[in-house]
Length: 143
Image (cartoon, rainbow, N blue to C red):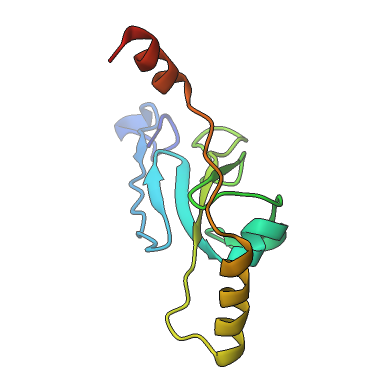
């Protein structure tokens, strides 16, 4: 960044010089960066996705609470406007994009296993998803 006219006075009382400022930004393994926008992934449980929950989402400084609505699908992305990095020479900030991923435990207790088996008896097959726009277009074109 160049700050024009705020450097030292030039020789023989000449005009002030410029200051060149170089920023070095340390990477944070919790985030991917695209300009001022940040991308992160948060692990959530099946009950949190199915029933809805308040989930803490990390930010560069601190965290923010995301209200996850009931019936949220794994992989869904929520955009938190203005929660990314600050824009240079602006009062605004980029966005924080949060992808929710289903966490599957690898060591279940006996009680958890019994509950999941009971759920499997009740939920036999996932419902068919409605066809998307591109599937309908492909179908109408006979592809």
